[in-house]
Image (cartoon, rainbow, N blue to C red; front, side, top):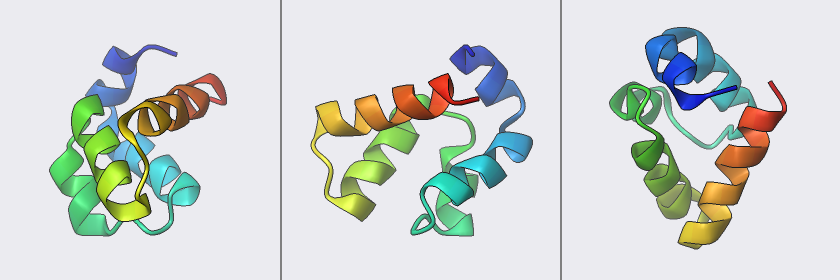
Length: 65
């Protein structure tokens, strides 16, 4: 799946992101608003991931959909 589809349907996909990363708050998901870089940054902050780990997590999530 490509990121353009995710960003265009963020309201639908934010629920799936919440299932994957349950520590993200609804406010954070709303602020992400379909921006991949923002999601990766929130994962770094919330989970303490390094940049490469956050990118890998998002890639894995995309591959699972």
